[in-house]
Image (spheres, chains in turn yellow, orange):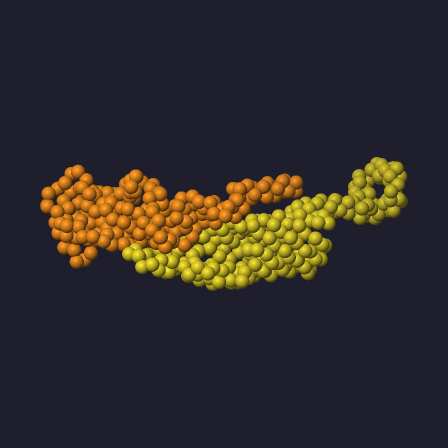
Length: 233
Length: 195
């Protein structure tokens, strides 16, 4: 019964006609206190939508909101010293892209993972990129002509970490080219040290190498990478 | 919050650049332990079985250090604009009598291994007797201090270097003639940076 009355009152009060509606409510209040709910019901679509819209717009502007654009893609790049790579991309948030895939650096294949921070999206978008990876053991002896160094570099694993600043050109929802410049840190290891030292000392001196641990190697070098990213869905 | 993140990213980028330490190119090779072995090259005659309390020189010999890849031969050099530093320090020194020597080190109370040039000398390693653990034919000397051995190396050609080592001891020296192999367990490190 109350709902029927409320519906009638709501129908009698045109939407947007505030003075009339207020009058109706005031009149209704004198006779039926419960009718207080009726205007809310009549305006339900608008009343309900307003907060939702507000909430949505605040979600859109939040850095932590899940990205609503294309979240998945494929990335190809090539550079020094990380080699060529192919990776899958996932963009959970507007500010952040994750990637994981394979690398090849002429010596061996490896695994890679990276994060790209995208603070703003402009026509040319600046990025901050951090990437790490591991190359499986490979033969890097062709990079040197020195006999002892060839032995050391015969079985070389490699881990790397790079940090770079980049620029991206293109549509962030479809296809972008990027250029990154930064620094890489490479950790590797020289193995078969005793044999290498022996090979380096063929003059036949009295000293022999009784034992030797592997030589940890650290390199810090500039990194340059160019690549393309295709957003799929 | 977004502004804070952006600020953090800028700070991160700055920190990365600062972490370079001013070197755009940098390389480091660190050999934590490589053991070179060389015979003393002479036979030390037996000594009277009378304890000596003043360190007595036993033998002085030249130890040849082979060329080690990724290390330079001196503490600091500049080659083609690269600052190159090298370091060679002792982990352990060991004297091992040959099996044919009818002698041992058990009578020695202390042994000092000295590294020297014509103008300078420094204690490289020492041994002090532990009666509960007699050395037998293998005497292990602990590094005495943080001695930079590269400053004592002399160029011997073919990329090799030599150092002059001297052994002195107190206690009762071996009664019979003896000779030994010297093992030097070294920590060698080299770095190169540019600019």
